Image 1 (cartoon, rainbow, N blue to C red):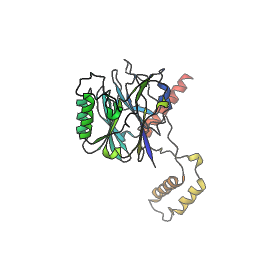
Image 2 (image 1 turned 135 degrees about the vertical axis):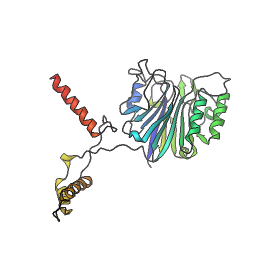
Image 3 (image 1 turned 120 degrees about the horizontal axis):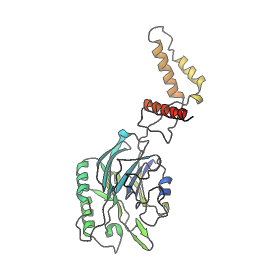
Image 4 (image 1 turned 180 degrees about the vertical axis):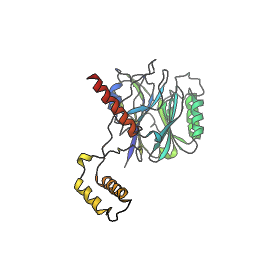
Length: 316
């Protein structure tokens, strides 16, 4: 059974160069988890933060931003788009398994117990209304408590009651298992990091599980999400492994194509087609480097290589 993963994690401003969450981010395999849905990243006043290798942020980072969606940089740019963003909400639309899924990443600031809505609900609601027929994943730190997700004995906060009713009206299913903590510090534990999904994608979710052993921090717990279906499309290399090509078989294939049976102006075109078909059928292609930029054209890559060669020659 094919699955693809998403990690939901409030890293508590601990994703900078020397912070305690850095080892966790460095350990994430983008092929297993091509999407990271992060709350409370550390973004400096110079608009910088630590981005793990092979990921790119869904938007230009800025100081004060409380959510950050990271996407595997081998997923073609045409397969995802940022729809809307504020400091506390980020709506990204991404092609997964052949269908568009809308991931809404939210951070709701801690409010007063008497609040009727979670912080920023108006903007969240606007996004939900605009999605229309496509699938939805609503993920984030909602900073509210309710026994439906927190378990027996947990207070029913007004804003949590509203969140539950509002998501149920839109047929969004709660993904959390009742009573499983998503935050722990010492003897204290609670459930405030939540996930909701439209009914069809909810049926495809095989796992929504906090993984306490993924980090040594005592705070929010990374949540592993596994969905059935094909993983996001990744751009393949167009470069053949020429040095390892089976030239004998390629030559035989070209000869058997009978490209030269008729001597006319189309002979060269037939020869090129025969060689291209033989390479496609018999020669393996290189695997893209982890540092490759799939959105760059071949010409852009050649220009960059030329600049690097010139720089090395100048330094000599």
